[in-house]
Length: 225
Image (cartoon, rainbow, N blue to C red):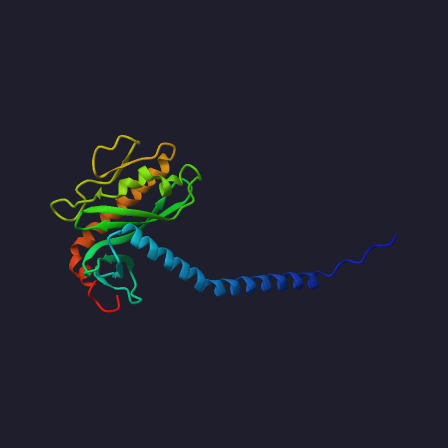
């Protein structure tokens, strides 16, 4: 009876390791090669979003909030960032703020515009979302829903440290107050998620921005911002 010779394991192992290393190298090279393009596209998308949520702005300056609680021009400073928008006269018209939270399917990331003069959120743009097509993704396209963010009340209380009224999402057609968001029938979870994201973010950022309005306003005249 003839017995087939056993296949040597070392050459097979060496081949598999070699293929794995080659694939890893190709992935790394591809990532590094496309990274500048991805970063540029991301920056351009953010630029468009800032002016979309601050429709009165024609210029912007980015600031980082330092660990010490101060806004500094974003020159590679560490800290969370906001984008101040200015009109043709260099006057501050609002601040664009990024926020994120859990939706129905995954994390939703938004950029919203806050106007200190109007004491309101004046625009919103969904940056990333994996909500259900035809249902949850209406948070990006439903005109009636987006109307909620033309002048969403986020005025501060007398202490200046918290919102006078917390943002809340109500059933579609039940909005009676300027701080309420008219939800989307059939996309309740997604529209409620937007309300929760904005409520938590505005509660933190609106008092901080108003505390440092002078510094942010000066960005319209600073060189290189």
